Image (cartoon, rainbow, N blue to C red):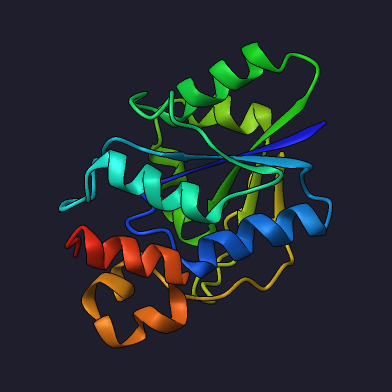
Amino acid sequence: MKIGIYVGSFNPVHKGHIDVANKLIENNYVDKIYIIPTLGYWNKNNLAPLNDRINMLKLVCSGNTIVDTTNNELKYTYQIMDLYKKNYKNDDIKLIIGMDNLKEFHKWVNYDKILNYGVIVVDRNNIKTNIKYDNMIFALINPIQISSTEIRNNKKIRTKYLDRKVLKYINDNKLY
């Protein structure tokens, strides 16, 4: 089985995130995706509480897109990949990242170890780059282009880019 590991803050989860997951599965890049919202990020501030981000993901994930609620506190991506490979020894495990991550990928702790597993790179905001590594697949899926930052900063676009259940959760819990 081909398993994708999709790590991020999902602050909040939006239609672009879910579009990526669905298209990767539909286009046979992976058979199943585990979405892992992280407890924190070195370069991100003002994250909604992890539990809220998990709850929002659970509202929109189903089928072969599964929310991982147990490995959110691991500090480094390679640790998550190692854990999944240990649990799914006979499966092909690949990390899913956006094109925007490539510029700094060489700075990730043990990035070379992550490359050994394989990485699926998804277009993000039409970023172009010549950066390529062995064992990287550039997925040609044309996902919805939006960021969580844009959604947090512009309430007018929320109805377009957030699932109605996520929008209701945000409003009910006074997030963002």
